[in-house]
Length: 157
Image (cartoon, rainbow, N blue to C red; front, side):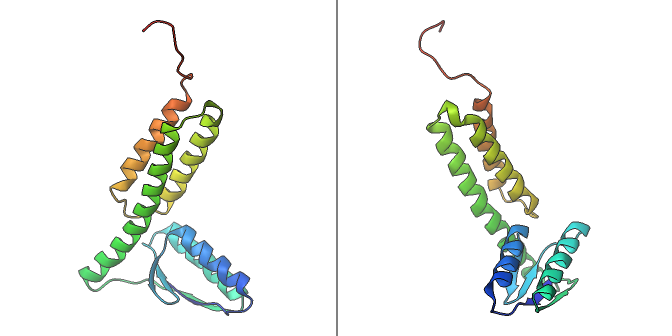
């Protein structure tokens, strides 16, 4: 967990910290209190954010926490899953839209962009929701099309 407080002014450091925490996929437990499952990577990332907060004349403490109630743990896990599920659904919809309205000139660029976005989401997906698989399949379907020549009329059926 990270407990932090960043001064309101100037707003740039506060916004930078918020964006960094969002990119990490934290669960917002309370005002100025966020949580991630503990491993070496997430601990290091929270320590980096804490250093950014300190550099912005704020205060930050990285904590190791243990949920005492299964209900509380389930709520934090559900919050993390719901946030990723929203991202996966948006990615799935975009991939499906691109698959339906396919333009050959955009295929490689769109496929690469969506694969990168899927990787970014998966990096902060600590408790994968069912939507992860649907997003993976939609991106694969789009990627599979990028390797195929455009459909033509004529030729053998």
